Length: 46
Image 1 (cartoon, rainbow, N blue to C red):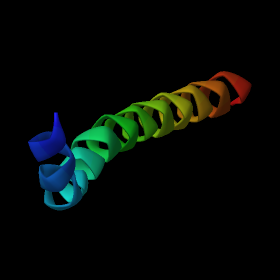
Image 2: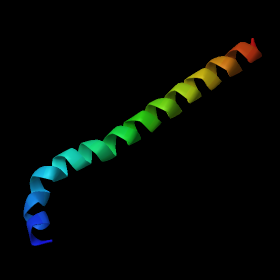
Image 3: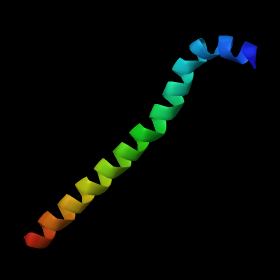
């Protein structure tokens, strides 16, 4: 367990990337769905 603590700092950057990637992906999915919904609503209004 002690060795794991010493290894943590360098690995923190990689873990941050791993944690951030799904967030970016979900943000892209949400943005795409909102964009498609907006286009659909604009098309329906016309």
